[in-house]
Image (cartoon, rainbow, N blue to C red; front, side, top):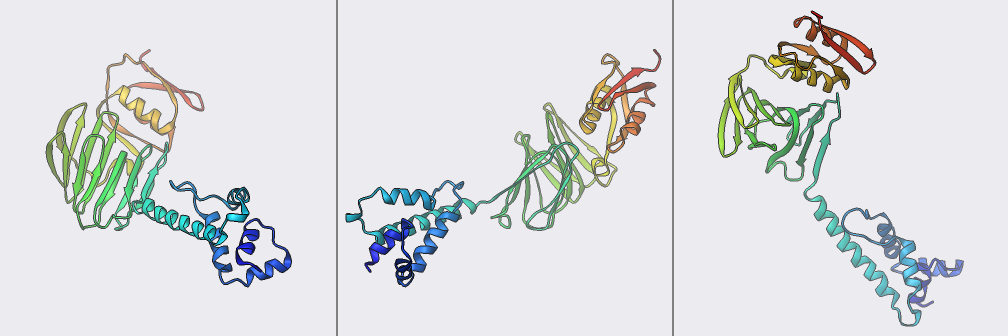
Length: 300
């Protein structure tokens, strides 16, 4: 039987049993089958599209059979797949890894060089794994603690500036109007607004609404890793906002109460957290419902 005739009928899924045997005996039969199988498997979400067999079949049926060279049709399909797979490889050459945490969710990420990132809640991390060994760089929104393996320069990009190290332990917070970098081991360099700050172990840099400061720290890791929020001379409003964020609750309290809070509360027990906040300030609290709390002035 004619080769082109068999290929045409095979593409149309119209072979009789005897014709199917003749088609399978063709030298190019296995290649034709492989081409169609790959076309059906090809991922159409990657900026390149190869028609499915059904779509291709309808298109082929509409052509004039008398003038169609079906061997060339199959060759054309193969060429399309070559281009498609080349584009697939190009798109994945710069593979972007992204992880985003929700409320009360922490995630530990192991980077390609075995550096570790502990991503705090409501945070997002992005990095390219394809060229990681040449350029250790990532983007951070939110907060994360880094334990970096020694090697080439390691850079954390944020909306407020960038942090670069060679190998160390440090914490970065970049959220709302706050940019804070704390160094727990080694040496950290912070770049912001064309300014450069170097932080040795035991120091931290804070940028709040454009105002910067540098101070010493006496702890060996950030408190949030221990499920604690710690405050020093903080306004009651800031403390309550932090409480609301961690426990996903509504809080009523005397907004005009001008008092400061120095202390801490834990993240895994709301009742203990409320006691830690209200008792030192001579305030009282009442749980109104499962997600609503009322804080009052204890003197009233």
